[in-house]
Amino acid sequence: MAVEETTNVPVEPLRHEDRIAIEDVSSWVLRIGVIASVLILLVGLVISFAHGGITKHIMETQTFDLNFGRLRHGIFAFQGFAWLEFGILVLVFTPILRVFTAMVLFAFEEHDRLYTAVTFLVLVMVLGSLLFIR
Image (tube, rainbow, N blue to C red; front, side, top):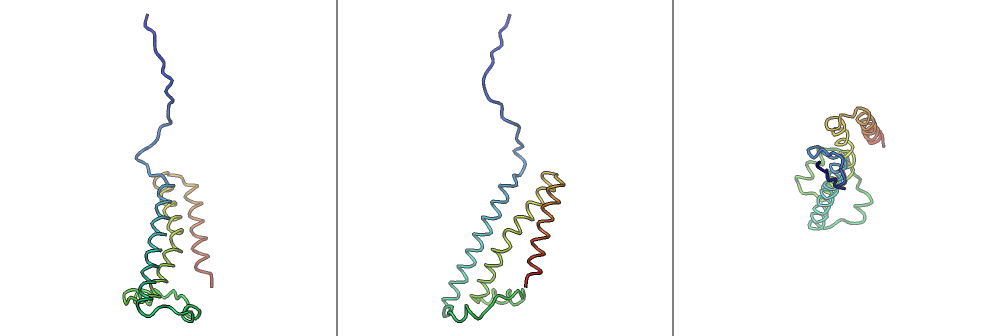
């Protein structure tokens, strides 16, 4: 008669190693967005100080303008204020990109319609609040 040996090895739940974890992607989107924003802001500061600096008067009177054509022209002309404005825009849109990537992952990776719909509503509300704020 054969005696079976039992081992007390805990059984781990099955994990899908080939699946993308939403938390990991979200954290990487936020990290990359913040790092990119800081680098762009530093470039803007360096350019501003190289061209004579930013005075208190300029910072109090010059406002951010969401004219993307003017912003693009200022970036390519190496205007420090345009680079600073671009860095702030990257920082503002980073969490929005995080919500968008979460929505895409819920839809195509998790196949979860409820979370996709809720995330879509959050994205619409955030974008709507940005568009209607003035």
